[in-house]
Image (cartoon, rainbow, N blue to C red; front, side):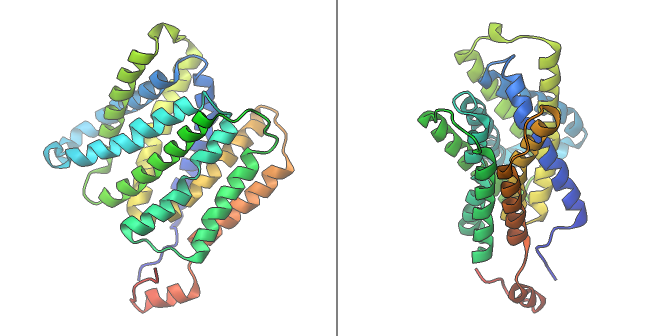
Length: 305
């Protein structure tokens, strides 16, 4: 009997993932004070790749580069080069709150892409939940926003969300064909090399301020935001429905804002409460199975699509 409920262990992994990625937004903004965006994106991915390579080396036989190189390349393109590159550049053109709203179109896009690409179930309940989640992120992140909206930044945000969504569904589709540790390792190394090379061409290494805060933020971004977080993400995707797992990503901006409230003395507002309630409702709707669906599963019938 196969249910789409989320096991307790996966809930723990999801909580860790959301916390790490929630911390990533404010820490990335801090890191940008010390390093240009494209170089920063390259450094954190390459640093993660090197750390993971040392961990993956004993299982080198599972890499199987001759057979898997195309999967490594496409995963690197969408999940590393485009996702981190566009995201890091976009933060230079738009406020973090507004940019995060656009990027967190990702769970909605994943629901649609996984529906067409992998045949995952799409119901009115799930679609409503995804839309509610996006509305919750928008409510939280746009509260009190008065900054000028950059059209180029808006485009970068949409492209970031789309690349992340395509990369996530692609990773889900190949999760049974490749070793997860080697996929994330090679993805990080390829993305890191490309972004570091691109950054070296368009930015100046002399602009980097080599200081303890910069090294500390880079260590967090490489070890936690990329290496550990993506290993957890792969684990969750390989064992669950892509759109259901992605629905928990709506919590990431909430965590980012709560961190600001706890540590930066930012105010707790009504919009935050409303947004949080919308996101909770979203996650419930996306992950809840209807009684009809449960009965069909129990009877070994295919889901209604």
